[in-house]
Length: 585
Image 1: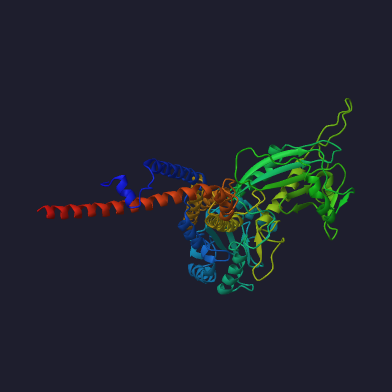
Image 2: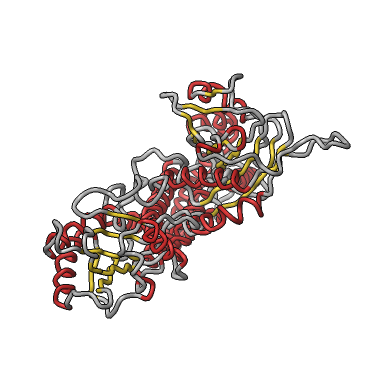
């Protein structure tokens, strides 16, 4: 501006590029910016926000392994009353309650005096007469109660012992107990009676079950697939009515209670040709370890019927029904009616593989396959009700062991338990698990689910934070948010006493956390580090980028020099004009 090309040449700026050079450089820059924008959208990693603060708060509330403050379970309450017509005064009951409450306060148990004996324990004549048959019938009758199997209220009825009887604690299959007290025995004082009763209750009702730091038969998971097999030995066809002959009469009530803790899907099938391993009629532990899993690998496997990110563990329950006698012995050569394989399932021997009738086994099935006299057709050997009951009993015993319960009943062993206060407990013959057992297991399961949910969410968040290239879709982020909210809600519901709802929320929270952590889309967008990427892309981009940038910078510097030269030339011209005007004047 204000200077001709000859003047600019005199200033040493005659070699300036034409406007077309500016246009070409700007075009190059625009193309590079466009390519950079495309590269950004190609390399950017979509990451949905994760509830890191909620996960940290949940971890602080739930706590780690072995921390008692992580247990959100509500306090239990024992309602103590005296049987009608008993010689116990209201003062005696109040004194006993005070002593018992002080002994159980560390367990988080509150002991109060009830307004009256509960209706389920009013009829006590059979429960205190000392006859075991009548005693078992009385205690087992309580399992037919319509009360919810999950509850935190217990009933303890104090009743005087008949002449010649000793003090004893009698537990029913629900959450009730009869304390039979004899002042003539060792427990003649209320203090000694309260101490002995508290000791027994800590061993039963308020025992702390735990799945932490233990090796269980199966993985503790929020859902399972139970696959039931009837296996023959290829010598004769076998068959069963699984739903009507086994599931309904012997397993359904136990599975209904188990479904309060975990989700269970059922499947059943028949395998005509199978073997436990070995070639003889006696199968020992070494043979099972060497051959059984290889033999069972030929049986049909499970089929996935829906899309899923996390698959529930598959647990197999087998009824092996051979045509010839087969015995399974342990390391000490003792015969076993069933055996369990950790992480795989349980096998029960029935029919010819089970014990003889004189040893508690089943007689020959009336539906055993025999040759038809006219057609010569051999009918299938159908599992009898007795064999179905034996198989179900073996399966339930293994499941009880998995739940950290005695396999044969609520109290290990049989008969009166020794000590100052003998203990007898009703066997839940129909349900397979007493209500008070279900309560203590549900507490351990709830604690395990919450802590595993927190652990899974923390590991997932740490993985995403440590790997910048990990992709987290919005669906996965929403799943993590819901898992954290459900875990928090589960702890709140448990503290309010809504135990079934708390367990359901804890199960769902863990399922969502496991599904998010197992999602196959949560992977790195690129499998190479930034150093490798630079080594690949810089040799391609620098030969194009550097000349354009250098030319652009050089052009900018020249444009700056040009503006300064034009400004100086304009100022010099103004000075010359002013001098000429003064000379003319």
